[in-house]
Length: 177
Image (cartoon, rainbow, N blue to C red):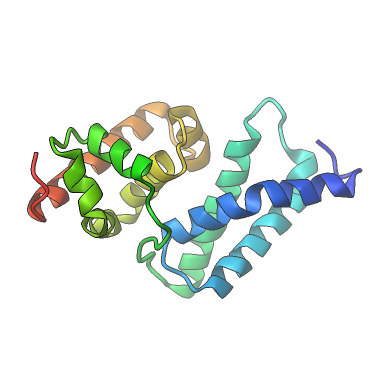
């Protein structure tokens, strides 16, 4: 990839702007202005580093890693703790969460979307981010490993622990197993 063709970069922005905006919103409740500022910073970093991108790696994981880093830097700089996401959950997302957590009544989870959202928001940041990437961004384990810069075993362990905590929170809020 090269910046020789400026139109190419515009196409990257068009392709990833909505996806990355949704990802940033899901990591923390931010005003739209902050999301736009973050997206601008993300694409500046992408632009600055595009010629150094290792084409043997996944571009999708690479750009999400930049988005992740910029978002975490934003939270640290403002001493803001991510407060959860406001982006809507699709029925597919809820079904994936329900089936992965072995919830007997998937309809309970679908019906109680707000409770599921609260339970996800209550997770510690390192568990919430892996749940968001897995279930909302549909990232595979290898992509999770690339984005979070964690070994595959750590990704599996962290996701497992996140699911255990999410399941416990759902049980505590009356969504039965």
